[in-house]
Amino acid sequence: MKRTLIFLTICILSFHAKAQHSPFHYPSYKGLVMAGYQGWFNTPTDGANRGWHHYEHRGVFAPGSCEVDLWPDMREYKKQYPSPFRFADSSVANVFSPYDQSSVDLHFKWMKDYGIDGVFMQRFVAEVRNPSGKQHFNTVLHHAMTAAKRNDRAICIMYDLSGMNPGEELFLLHDLDELTKEYGLLEKSGKTSPTYLHHHGKPLITIWGVGFNDHRKYGFKEAETIIDGLKARGFSVMLGVPTYWREFGADALHDEALHALLRKCDIVAPWFVGRYDQAAYPAFHETVVKDIAWCKENHVDYVPLAFPGFSWRNMNGPAAHTIARNKGAFFWQQVAGAKEAGAEMLYIAMFDEMNEGTSIFKCATESKLPLHPGGVFVGIEDELGSDHYLWLAGQAANWFHGKPGYGENLPKRK
Image (cartoon, rainbow, N blue to C red; front, top):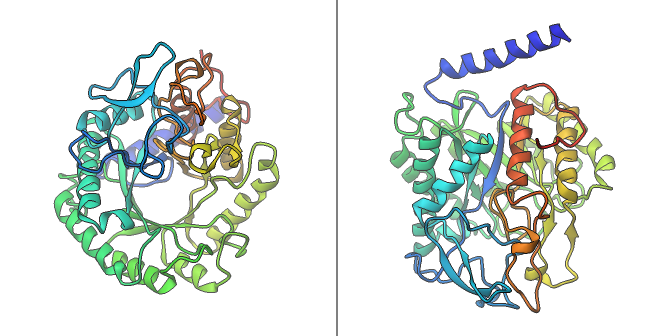
């Protein structure tokens, strides 16, 4: 036992020593737990001129019509916006907008408080191609870069290709050139963006949405142009792919071109959300084991995904597919499974995704939900508290950092 503790201490000190020798605070994804950050919500009065965005369902945000299944715990937000929803005592239910610096600051403060290493900032090509979308996501990214620096959290840009048209791969590269200049992403000194996530000695860019068999307009040719362009500019690349990318299974195109592209990249990041529940995960776990073996054989790093649960009934109707959180047992099952399989890093979906019910940030508990006749909100159990999944994600980060005392059993909060 003593030798094990000494070994773990040496590993942790070695990790920090490597970080100290780099001008960047996060020189590698290895050993980190990161989450995805949507940052896509708007209200009519937040200044973005986008109305209710990603809160509304078919243009309407009101009881019986919305696209969020979770409700934010608003107690700590400086800027709050009234919604058409009411609580049982008739008081107004407020929401937030990441268009405000204070809201993004609060989110990054939570990351620091609970020990989550940082986030991948989602940048949707289908939204930033339009002036209003670009203004919004540029503003949110600016807030996040500032907050990441203030709170010493890792941050990385993730382009979501969903909805991209052929030819817009060049738009994406031009957009990144603008961001590179603004935030000094390729600076060797790390002065402008010291907490920007690096991997294999280069700043990391994630490209999400390659190889899916859901009839996307773009394909491997466009993806290759992007990957080659990123590599030529001096970036490392993480590629977001279907769950069954390795064997060309249910959600993946059956084409060796996908594997050829992955061999050009630095990290493989498959999308697992909705693919299993707690009962089905033990059988699915073998997929992660085999994925890691393929990646080792092909000299590519691998990051599995963990999500706390899933719900999109307000988006798709009361009979829509849901996956129970089971008070965190389901989330921790995936964390432990990733560790057991030999994963060296972890991606959490998602930090703020209330639409599909995967949020880990502070969401309202069952007794604090607004009324929603004709719809349903999912609350966190009162006895757990609104911060339960932030805390669990922080425990996962401790484990990936090398802290002892964790295993397959769900940690108990003192």
